[in-house]
Length: 529
Image (cartoon, rainbow, N blue to C red):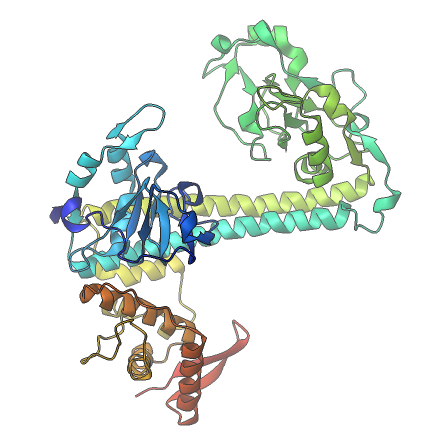
């Protein structure tokens, strides 16, 4: 395995492009970047003149690395031009030596993040020591192997992202079901009484309670292996019960605090810091009490279902608005038990509440399975990355590994059969067919479309996929020529020209159509030679 200093193969170099003050461009800040993946959750587009002084312009040739709090692992492979904060470093990998996506995956790897996290300066705002960063030697397998590694890791990363999207979709579905069943648009909403939460609690005097205050329970009395669990904000902060930091007290201490015991089916609510989060205590809870940061409610099961109450507290806009208006914390956000007792909630029939609880439980079961799958995929990703960057991964089996990860392809021709086909790149024209602004003309388009169709064999032909390849080729050519201009993205007229040619190819039987039962739509395929 060869190695090279980052400063030699990916020096800091911003884009040569200079947007005009009135141009609306992407403004990128650290808060937009997801840790570990580089996913951008929300893009801010503003006039270039609104960029601050501590910024720079980046483009698709850069890899953006966050030097602030490097343990947060924020690395971006930008797909368009933009303006970024100077807390991001614009690496410009040499395309003849270092694949851009390979560099992104390497900088996100556990080994590199662990290494750079020890090379920081500053206590409150730790930043990577850039002299150490630039001297770091990155493993440099052959360029084609780098692309194979990036391809394989992208497949696993894509599956993780897909499963996370499924988790979110289940969350959204459950919210929709709750709104349909209990929201103002529900057919019987007007018939339900609005009652204070206290009316849904059991009749016992201690059915609504907070944890022990002050010297009644000190942090010094916690231990990691005691007899009685102590629950806090971390057990409900994600609106479902989960074990966070384990805290215990002795049985002797519990005897002093047994009035604060938590029971199966109790509803717990965060009342300090992050207020209004809620969860239901599971049936298999061990002997436990709650801290002063939680309120606990033992529910009257004859008129209320704990799942309905908990979900209403953290998901109903009506209830969340009430809790926010009652927040009386001066330094920290906070509620007290009286405020929770007074909060009004609809009281539908317990049968309807139970029906929602069954739907909720089934959804939770599906989400639990997805989380297990995500954990396994993340373990696989970390293992593959470690092997790849140590030079111990058999890259001749990249396609086979990728297919085993994804499962059997729907059609054996839907996936490449040899690694040499990955990734496919449009050929460089033998003569110059681009003008100085890199605007693609019809000759270039037709040359590339022909190559694309021939490469795809009998696979699906996609105009969108083809035009993305055109965009990438234009960028690559501008880099190879060391051109000062940046390519213009393909526009609607280009798309229409490609569509016209595809229909012509269909007319002369050089392409064909068939029906894709799986996606329920017509697809275009290349014919056999």
